[in-house]
Amino acid sequence: MITKTISEFSAGTRYADLPADAIVAAKKGIIDFLGVAIAGSTTNVARVITEYAAQEHGASDAGIIAGGIRTSPYLAALCNGAIGHALDFDDECESWNSHPTTAILPAVLALAEKSGATGQEVLTSYVVGWEVAARIGAAVYRKTHDRGSHNTPLVGTLAAAAAGARLLKLNTDRMRTALGISASQAAGLQANVGTETKPLHAGLAASNGVRSAQLAQLGLTANVDILDDPIGYLMAVAGKDHPAPDLTGLGTAFDIAASLCIKVYPSCYNNQRPLDSMFHLIKEHEIRVADIAAIDLIVHPHQIKVCRYPRPRTGLEGKFSLTYSLAAPLIHGKAGLDEYSDAKVLDPRVTEFLPRINVVAMDPKVAKPQYSHCDPGQLVTVKLKSGKQYSYDAGRPKGHATNPLSWEETSEKFRSCTAGILSTGDIARCIELVDRLDKMTDVSQLMTILAQKPAQSLL
Image (cartoon, rainbow, N blue to C red; front, top):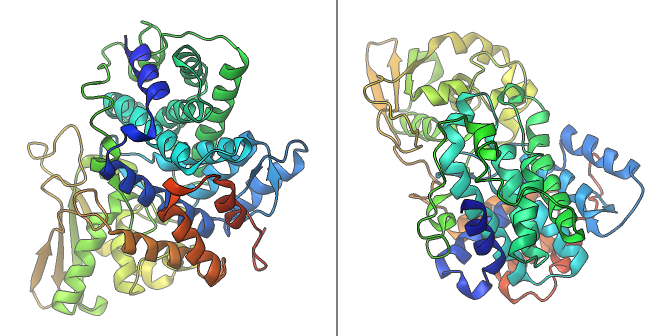
């Protein structure tokens, strides 16, 4: 039985069961998320969601990242999940092409603060949640995406519930209940991509995971076979011909080590490889925007469907625009946080240049039905007014699981995201604490730093 097997794994996994490469990857995923969440704390998403939490009087068990307030684990997870996804700079996974950490880790941290959990408990619960997401997500993501669902909350809600229930040390029966409760809350729409509700999806996944785990702990009942029932979760999200999750090697082969993809650019992961290709061409051939007649980009149809804004009107839409992401390096010279602002996206030079960029779906004979970020066939071709043209495909984007960032490179991203928000000392201390998270007796010492309200915060 699928639900029982996943629940036994989730409830029974201990820190000692985690292989070294999974622990290394987990620490990278955690420091990366915390950095992009600190950067995300300056957004309107963070302002609104933190103000919402501040209006809800109640518990003060868990902190909101860069919020300066404490609240319930449920609301802390809601806020931190949304804040961590606000810039779309958080990690991606190869196995189901979505965002695991922003749904899972906020739930774990919120419950860990309340209970005073150790760093090993946090690492174990986070990895358990990632694995649950990988097994369920790999089975359904293609069908659910084709139906218009956003998989981060659709799958991440169950993963957050499993991770939260693991942190609370629920037994297998209560874990099955937590999954049953969470399955009735798992939802999200692609139609909200490019709006502030997309990051809210991540917050809802995290907070619903917390609520599911806590309700299961208190004794609420649910269908304990929610992944097996003919009219259960899999049928509801993927249809009657849905595949079953592959549970081969569950508990011995950990997806996080083979699937964690850390972004170099703060935009949809489908832009990462074309951006690497564009920067290569600019550097290799000293290309100037004035010399360009046209740019052709060949990509998988999946990328075109996700990056649905060829003429973006906001910074958020720019994050889901293949055309803008190729224009930014040429017009602005960079593709960092500032380049995905409203002002940079609406720069008249960009507006004038975008019609020169042609995005074409690759030959259906080449395009694999199950899209992978490293599939062959993606190509950027720059055609110059002189008649010359240059083509390049970066193949494996920097930060991909097969071309990973080192710990130091991931730490440097954290420094870049938090500079000017956290003090230099606090930045160094956070990196140190995550690096030795497995030695930490109480994760609250990390959250005390992260949850303080910066003097220059917009909140």
